Image 1 (spheres, rainbow, N blue to C red):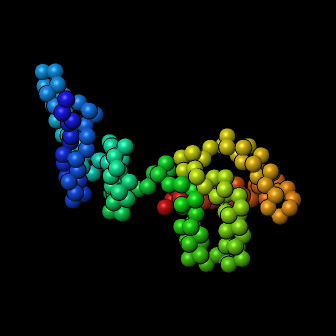
Image 2: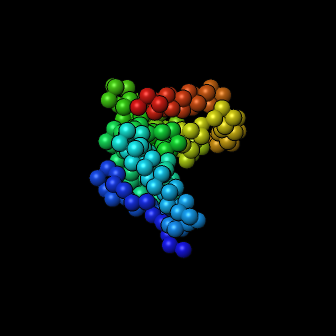
Image 3: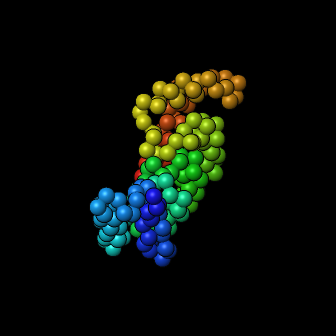
Length: 173
C-alpha cells in the first residue's frame, strides 16, 4: 500500500503531510476523492484566511513552526492552550515595567512567581486553569515553607489574585 500525501503551499513553503494512511487507489477511487476533497478544503481555508495548520495536522513536525509564523504574521492570535503560564510571566513583568510599576512591587511579583505561581501553575497552559485547581493549590501552598513558616490565607489570596491578573493580561494580549 502506497502512503498518500497531501502536497500544497502554505505561507511560502511547500508542505507535504501524510494523509491518514489511506491507499491512493482505495476502493473504487474513494480514497483519492476524499483526499482531493480535503485538499480543496485546505486550499479554500488558506485562501479565506481561516486555515490553522496545527488544527488540521496536530501531529506534524511542522505544526509548531507554522503556529509561530501564523501568529507573527498576524493571521491569528495565540490560543489559551498554546501558552504555558511560566512562558507568559516574563512578558507580563516586562509590560508592568514599561507601565512604570515600582521596582519593589515587581520584586514582590517575581518572588510570588518564583516561589508559588511557577512551581504549581507554570507547566499548565491557560486553558487548564480551572476553579477546581484552587483547592489543590491551597493544599500544596500550605505545605511549602519558603521562610520557615506556613503561608497565610491572605498571602494565598494574593497569589491567586496575581495569577488572575496574569491570565487577564494574557487574554487581552
